[in-house]
Amino acid sequence: MTKMVPATEFKAKCLALIDEMERSGEPLTITRRGKPSLTLTAQRAQKPDKQSIFGCMKGTFTVPDDVDLTQPIDPDWEAKWEAKWDRLGLPVRGNPDDR
Image (cartoon, rainbow, N blue to C red; front, side, top):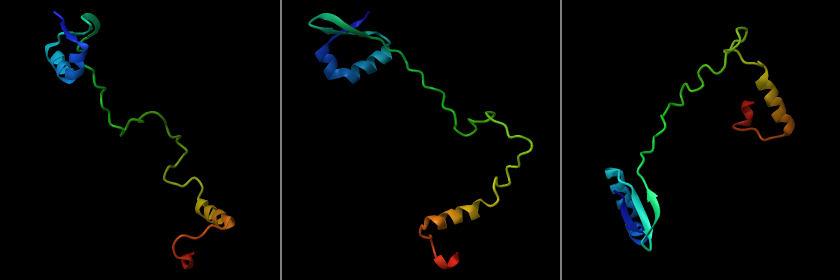
């Protein structure tokens, strides 16, 4: 049997009525001027499986055998960066005597 509730009562007691509906599993019909307007049914929302972000990319790419990941791609990258920094005339961070 569906429980009938006027819209004004639903507005005033919304959370309590929803809690009751979830516990009993009984549908709730909201009425306006005595006529059914809306029927709510309790349906438990399924929570998504929480997966750790660690390891979520496992198996999505492979490293070719001829690539050594322990070596830098360009051994002179730092010298090139410093030269670019100097060309731009940007201020030196830290103590300028350390350069």
